[in-house]
Structure formats: C-alpha cells, structure tokens
Image (cartoon, rainbow, N blue to C red):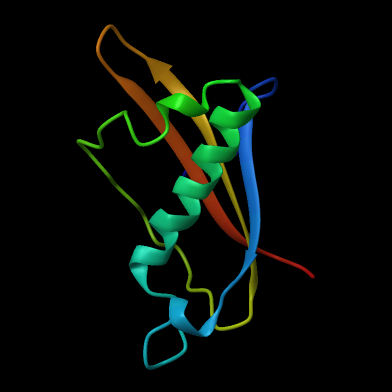
Length: 102
C-alpha cells in the first residue's frame, strides 16, 4: 500500500464524487477512473509549482495500481499525488486515492 505523502512534500490534491459514468454495471468505479483522478491531481501539483507546461509533455512509461477496496457510485474520494523521485531522465510519482467522509 502506498503510504501517505512524506511530511513537507508538495502534493496535488483533488476531491471528487464517483459519478455514474465512472462506474461499471455494478456501480463500482471503473479502473480507468483512478488514473483520471491521479492525472487531475498531477495537474494541480504542477500548477502549484508553476510547472503546468510540463503537463501532458512528460510521457507515461509505467503505471501500476494496487486496488485495496472499491468505491461506489456517489462516494466522495480524494486523490493525492506527489513526486517520489527525480532521475536524470525520469520522474516518478506516487499517488493515493481513498474514500473520504462527506
């Protein structure tokens, strides 16, 4: 499981409600919805750092998600994304999506 962001990390954060188009026939979220929320949090992070011009420019070469529990139609969720490491030719994010109380 991804731990929460480290203290002092710059974090992009969005709160959303699971909408009907985000779900499958059982009213559970569709797996692709998680990536959309992570990308929204990435845009927030880059904007807060004054680096919004990087959004959409940095290619995705690896994407990995461990789904721990489902969220359902109309659940409130929060997505947090932060920079985990920066290499010579790479940038690695970590993100966490969780259900939140209204």
